[in-house]
Length: 382
Image (cartoon, rainbow, N blue to C red; front, side, top):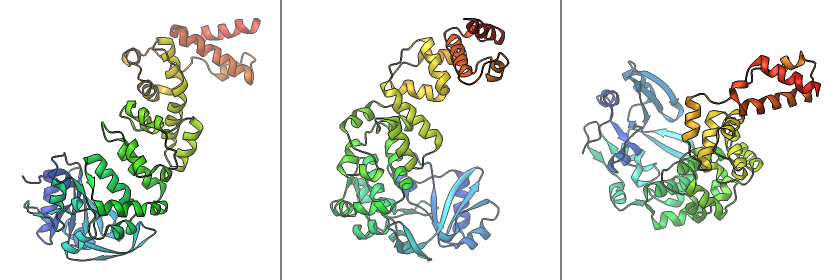
């Protein structure tokens, strides 16, 4: 077998390798050896950033992380990150290296990596380099740190979550000494930003046909995400559709609890709103009929309504039919300004709009400005 990246990526790596040692590295080789589809390619090179820029000047170059020797090269819409061989020293707060020393040695570069199964290299001709016996660990389904595991986790505590995620997603076992060091190092996760920790959690949640609850409990991870473990979460995750917001909603028992936690996670406003709504709808019974579905869409929009229905395991046939036939309410034919001209104000306007919405959601054909104004006038006379 030979690693075969898309031709535009091969072209870039081949061109650079004509001047400096250059290798495909890391996850792309691991996934290839596992028979998985490779989506992202990374390379490491003896060339400096300036040397890369000069040799690859014909391509679009993004300075992804110049301080750490990384450029992203784009050729015909294909991206590849290329990083100068480097040695990392004196990690700060169990995460970022205080200093980076560039080297011309691939061997030194591979030493700094986290796990043996992520320390492969492959030259443009397809020759594999396995300095740390990663292939043995891959064949035996083992996650093992390179060198002293305690030191590896102390350098970068995020490796704790990465080790757990790799083992969980691949169905591998964490090697005995690596796991001992992992448990001893757990408190160092406190020094990692919540965003980075949550990124790892999201990746675990989006692994198909797997439920991470028991893993999160076994490794005592719930406190590091500021959420509480509860057995009901396991069954909720088991039933949840393969959707990130739906999966996250399984962890919460109230919308306010979800909103407060997701703000700490620095999630987007859209995600916070969607998860909050999903949690609130846990306790709301929904009928699968046109009027109920029109209300749902009017209040939440199409995207979130579909998530809610999936989350509650309600058949989507009627919903999709209504969307296709546009049998739902985008907006009322009247607005507050129309009602002001009738002499309504404040709460009267809000109540009148609500009454019109109820009417139209039951009978969409009545969503006509003249009819609704006439309807409100008749209510005013009562």
